[in-house]
Image 1 (cartoon, helix red, strand yellow):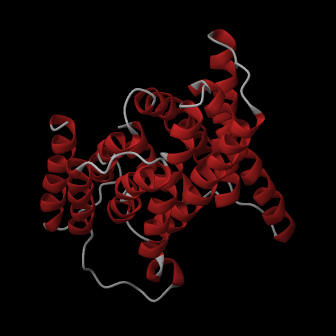
Image 2: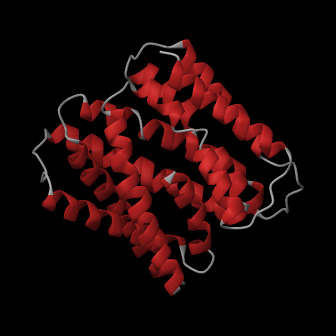
Image 3: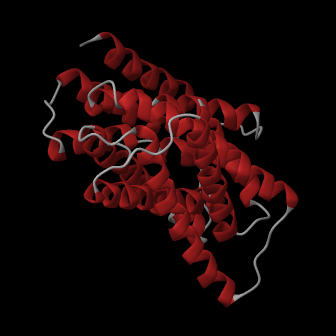
Length: 277
């Protein structure tokens, strides 16, 4: 729910705030939230340096590369299209868990992932697009974001947690990697020209940093630490449902009739992976 709503709200923040600044403030605020949370609870248990490197790069792939691709797609089209395409991540998460983590290829997990992907397809309208690069290649960027998110939220996470790294330590290093990458990108963009920003954009960046990168990831890490990654990845399909609802309720978008079929397929996939073990 947090990820779905946050992905939609970000569209409003990006309307008058530069992508580089928005991404850096989002990751930077989330990093501060994680540090404060750990200081008040468990602290940061030491982990092997090899695991820290995996977590660091996992954060870059997920919250920098994947998020940048998604935000570019979000700027070029309606949220109710970008959200479903980017959140084909459950399919890529299942594939990555089987290929890289040698988890068993459960039939119900693949069937659930297929339903989620099919639902995402039906949620995308067939309206004519303008010929601007942002709208022409927006769906491609959204799908690539799904590949990055599905892989990075499954393989490096499960790899590190299964070898003794605590969820909070993983989160610190992953968000640290993301913040470092966004900071470097911000410096490069600043040299090329003036950055655009608004008070609303900054507040939304901080808000989504809290909901998506801090609290949402705490919940996700707690879930994936307690179940096989190939079973947890399809449940992530709920992001599509909540993102779709948020685009209608918050942004007042008007999706096509095919959206109802997409929502039903996604719910079917989540139900299948939840009930069949």
